Length: 504
Image (cartoon, rainbow, N blue to C red; front, side, top):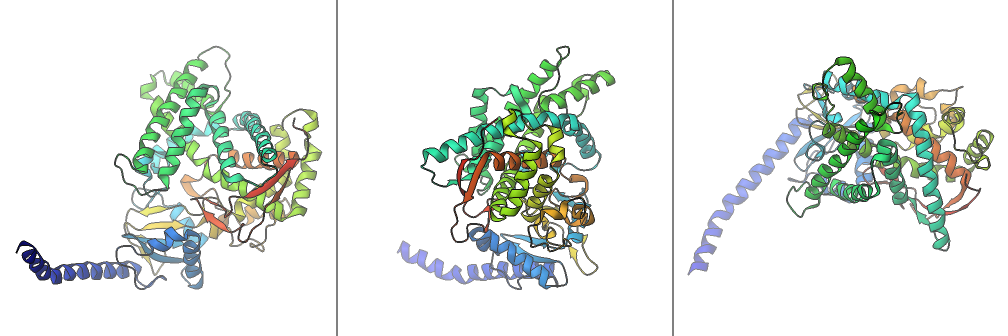
């Protein structure tokens, strides 16, 4: 009798439930079309999910489809819908500049990662705007002066050299089987960032704890934002808290060390704390009265730097190897230039002055960044309605994706061709087409560490090509783009390695 009653109730309410579901589906479709207006994009969307399934299954094809739709229209952008969120993909460089130039409370908020505020906190540098953002950037700027960068060049090379030796050893142990470079490059970059940013203040035990925490953080980035015990996102958020504490302790140690007479900065945190102490002395105030000076705040910003330096740099190193192997004449020119300026036989490292002389190697580094911009998209959210063009206004709450990758193939001479000469002195296309070279962003949030990033890529190219012979292990589609979430070769850059010259 009870089961019969339940069945009767279900039969009775099912039409009403279906009506409610269809009503929500109808409202969702109408709301989407109202936001979409006449912009290019799908006319109908899958209820509740939109195009999320395609995005998860094949993100490369999804973003290529958005770009193609934008190109084929006269708009320069396209619209879509992902799990309850209306999105706008911007292909046109000038429209991207409109977004980059209007990062402020009443226009666009840079979000970096869709759930970044939960992970990084609201005081992360990318979430700041206005005067507070300007003040913090001004305090960070001394970390990237020529003197500071010259100090980092030596540290970067020592780590690169250690890892190249390790890679060669792994290749020998594996019987010259091809090595996937993606995770090897990531580990090298993490080691480099730790050494350059906090130097001697991260001991071996803390470094091991840091590496485990950073792995946990990386896993959480790619998972659903379920902030409950046992879920990857929850573990990632807790890992970030601990990582910031470790870096805050490094800042505290640096402050103490620099109080010793005659002590010179030996890493990024030293340069930062040196300027901070000067500011405190000049203002005759305690550290608590100087903005952004607490250990925990500094630890948070150090983590931001470290996170920004990882995946994007790894992507660039992998594409440098891939593109140089594809273009042996360019590889030969790099090796020739480097050999005329630096040789491992001299048992000395490359100096900052040597690096400045490597003009062609720098051109290759810039072309790698243009041709395969590592962070292809820079997501923002519209805080208010924003008029993007004369005929279209982006609705409030829209997630907007300016495409740095698409901008790189606009304006430049034969943009589909990998051609480092475009950045040489006789062409200077990075200046001629400056508004299309957006790999480091534009506007108030343009990357403050871009010279450091270019130096790192140049040093890697110079040392890798000089010390090692390498050949890609080619399979069908191995050089296709894969989103992880920055872009890398589909096969994780499989290469055969062998020694070419003795190590310095």
